[in-house]
Amino acid sequence: MKFDVDKIANLARLELTDDEKTNLRYDMEKIVNYMGMLSELELDDIEPTTHAVLLTNIVRDDVEGRSFSRDDMLDNAPATVDDELIKVPQVIEG
Image 1 (cartoon, one colour):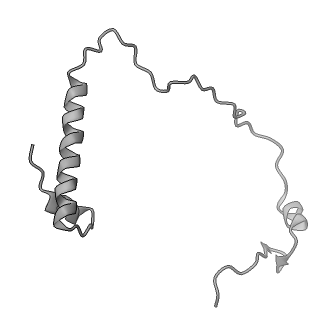
Image 2: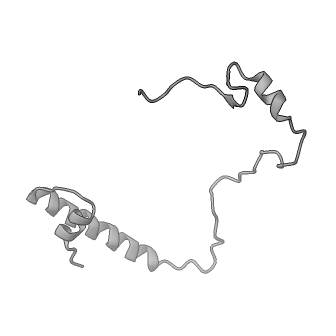
C-alpha cells in the first residue's frame, strides 16, 4: 500500500526531511500490514473484553443534598465585592 506522505505531513502540520518521510512511509506500511494480520485471526470463540482487569465504579450516587442559601455562601467567602460576588485573586494582569 502506498501512502501520500507529503499530504499526511501537511495535514498534520509537520515539516519532514526526505529521510523522515521515508521512515514515516515505512512505519505506516508496517502498521497497516499488522492490522491486516489481526483481521485474519479467527476470533469467533473469543469473548470480547473492554479491560484486562475487572473494574468497578467506587463513586457514590449523585443524590440531592442540603443546599445553602446565597447569604450563607457569601458569609463563608474570605472576601466579597458589594456583598454580591466572591472576590478572588487577580489572575490576568491589567
